[in-house]
Length: 294
Length: 160
Image (cartoon, rainbow over all chains, first blue to last red; front, side):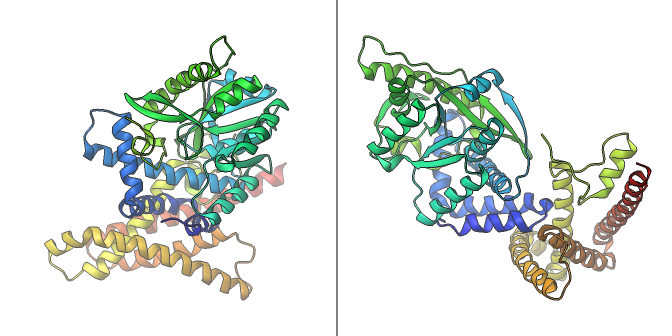
């Protein structure tokens, strides 16, 4: 199920097929992946069990299918924007915070594997004429990574630049320089990969590890963190959800304690957003087994 | 923020919107159009496949094969859409379809195919015939609406 073939097929379909055949094709594709990408299905069910306690396993299977269908729509919409510059309808939840972010001299956008973060970054860059550096987990497949990179470059007209979180210390200095220079850096803060600095928090009553990099960067660069999510709100319609910025201050305590304060605020935002938009939490690996240290 | 254009897939809803005092400019942001038109097209294709493959079978066999047939029809769509793309290339090499975008050329081929299926269904039993009739009526009304809208737009352009 890995490889660039699916992404290329999607690009072909977006370019070549009329919009009215897409709903049923996407439904079929989602069903195909639901049955044949077993690890993804199990991960979604496991994460939903965490986020929505008390629901039955069967119900969570239906929910996992709904999440996959939403995922199919978001990557299709992102491809459509990239290839045709189609203008999507969107509404803003937290407009004041978004305006603040657009005017900020150096800021960190903290997001999650929710909704269409690729499309969101491209639309934000276009709307506010700001460049964004997007830090993301490396793709397992090199060709897919190249395809994704060129897609984001095309969608954002060059204003969205991708960095990979596995790049190490050099990237940290690079990002620090970028935010100090007034730039915006976007980081996904709901999953960690091996080798990335993390700390344990209590998410939905379970101990999981979340990345601490964004908070350390905010503390050192003295810039605010804006939690932002680009949620699919309907057919070709999105909602930009921006929450109150997290301002980290150096206190007399240790740096770890300051980072922990920021991380706790983020955890609350993440928990609330996942609860509200569980059908768009595209964490396709189980957050507990890969990250938790019970 | 919405892209508006004069070219569209479905003229009938545009004409109805105009008659109701609304805007007839089109955008592919209409959930209802995408799903109703998509559902009707896939429904006709499914019924045609059911007539072709399940026609002579007993009722319980038809029930048993209803879901596998849906999967088969979905897979067949993937193949047909690819074949259409090759056909469009071929037609362009022959000088046809050169000024039409890929998705609109696909739309023409899909509608021709579904209309052929619907004509076949008209000759069959009551349910199949009803589905075929619905398609033919909707298609005819849509074509009429397209002609009326084209005439109105030309008239408005000339007036301004």
